[in-house]
Amino acid sequence: MYLLLVFRAMRNFIVVGHKATTTPSFSLEDIPGTSGRLDILCRAVTAAFVISHGIRKDVCVYLVLLGGEIPKTIRLVGETLRHLNPDERTTAALLKKALAVPATPEWAMSTSGIFVRTGGLAEVLTDLKDAKLIYLREDGADIRGLDAPGKDSSLSGEAAFILGDHTGMTPEEEALIEQAGARVVSLGATSLHADHCIVLINWFLDTNVFMSG
Amino acid sequence: MYLLLVFRAMRNFIVVGHKATTTPSFSLEDIPGTSGRLDILCRAVTAAFVISHGIRKDVCVYLVLLGGEIPKTIRLVGETLRHLNPDERTTAALLKKALAVPATPEWAMSTSGIFVRTGGLAEVLTDLKDAKLIYLREDGADIRGLDAPGKDSSLSGEAAFILGDHTGMTPEEEALIEQAGARVVSLGATSLHADHCIVLINWFLDTNVFMSG
Image: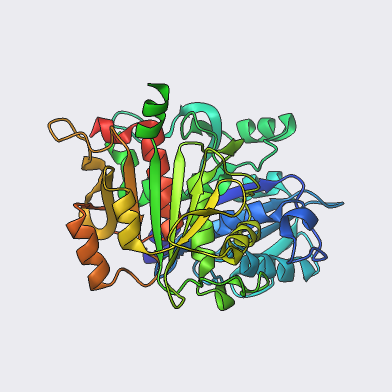
């Protein structure tokens, strides 16, 4: 029962990197310029996990990397995640290690709490088919309306938040997300980077903002 | 009149780096390990300024660097800020340039929108004596109570938010901040990094959360 409760409270973040490299050959001295903007995904990882005195155990991040010949996904699991520091370069070094692991359609562990496999957004959405899917897009409904009294209880179980990178989702991805039954919600009129969206979502969940809707 | 309105709406963020270097001799290959955790301040800068399609013009950031022989402060002004990218290393490189400028008690420009001088928190608080000062600390009052109906209008004018780094404020700094008349407010029970606090404050100001208190 305890395990079940822990599982149900999990916060999943899915971040799609449309040009993000699937090989470890990028330079840590120029992450934005050599990795297909893997820096965006590094900051998303930090935003998802890092708090002042540790790592959020109840978070799981899926980084969907689409900048290679075949898609790869890196999964980071808070419960067992090790070696994550708040700085961008350290995170990039962890992802570099993960990309050096030979990837197959099955998850393979790189370092503690970090896994890699081939496959993209469709596979992740299948993994998370039992979670409440929430897709962040500027023209969505106000996120604070989620779980308001009288509506169905979107965030009482496991939730998965889907975020794009700087290029936005393709029509094919939009269709996949819609077919998966995701709600489209917005954080407001100001368009924010994925990592900043994740900071806000974590805070909403920490402070039960949704419950006060 | 237009200029006055712009000035009054300014968002100031003051971040104190207790061990942050005041010289440009740190390594961009190991920012956390060689700069007295200037990486924390780099992320605060990004959180304060960067949105999806540009830079926030109405933001001003003061980085108080206390890790050298004498304190220095770097000021970044959104209205004229140039060359800021979302990645940590680029920001660190801009700060490195600022620290190479000979500093005196008067502001000297480094690159567009970035200024440096000697002096620490006391001098910044004097600069901002006409702003509403808000000090973020875990045991403060709930930030969402600011500007609630019936209270005075804390955020209708220029506001300045004071944040510490990973080491917290010293008793002397606490006394300075109290004497300056700052309100002590909290973002909740989960202790967050300074950059994540700034993301939240920007969102509150963007969406007028304070007004709905």
